[in-house]
Length: 410
Ligand SMILES: *[C@@H]1O[C@H](CO)[C@@H](O)[C@H](O)[C@H]1NC(C)=O
Image 1 (tube, protein in one colour):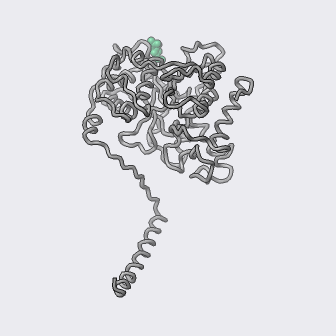
Image 2 (cartoon, protein in one colour):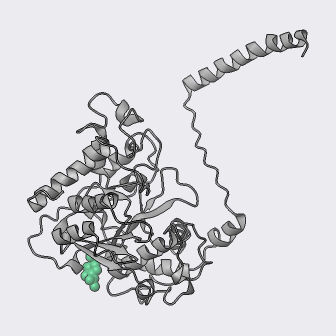
Image 3 (tube, rainbow, N blue to C red):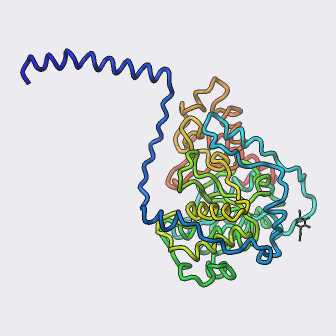
């Protein structure tokens, strides 16, 4: 470049850059820019084949087809004590946590009569023995369950694809809570008997990430036993009882992605629920799931939900993201990353002194209102020493269990 040209570029370029910068600053000062970058490419052929067409339901809600074990007028049309849907995504401030606080505990009091394990509220979780041994990180989930749920009224069934009975951690909880904890090995063809998936050729699908078969297992065990599914990578923070008058899945995150809006990491359906009957019908009559994919998870729930609407059946509920997955929104209104030491992290630690991540602070306030914290696997990570998970959750579990069993086992 000749010196004169360079000077001209500078003469006009420099003021222009300054003007642009000042303009940007003024706009930024006056307005709050919102940009959520999330670019996903969905195969048009797949959308046209799987998402857009709304096929007929399988007739599971016809009173003649509803199982005598399922009370349609109570479960679907009955009056409920709590509302569990907010109607908007609650992306502002602490709205979602505050909403969780409107769900009040049922006043069913302390039970003095013994409830046989089969008649209790059933909770299911699943561990694949071929993925990793069940160790301390998995124990935290068990601990969180027994520390937060109403033990004499509940039973947790730990499902697996192999024997877990020799595992020392599992043995400890079986001994401590013999009527509230049990093991089962999954037999998919057996569980599928009598459903639309009975004898289906897709039943022995397996994939390394445990998505597709994990997705099927949860629907089958809830169909057979009824109850709530809790993914193993969750820590429970509150008794789920007030949610159980509803049948529900959860919101994937606070962004409501068009095809990926729903999640089944925490879900609840009654035994022989016609919603699940319809899910099996839809699985049996759709193209096989891609692997790995959420075709038998998030995508299936959404396809089912839309079919229910079209046939004027009240759909299952969708819990707001933070009730089960408070990491699924922005930095400033998600709980802090559980796997890094506490630090100024969005709103929680920025809050005025006395309202952050310390005991009695804003984070604890939120954790007491929501029901679970979904950790999204990350099995290789540990909770930092003295971090909020240890202080606000794990230590509390230990204290609670110690009180419950009258001695220190932990
Ligand atoms: C179903 O639930 C309704 C409302 O709770 C109740 O009145 C009715 O007796 C129940 N039916 C059966 C068969 O239990």
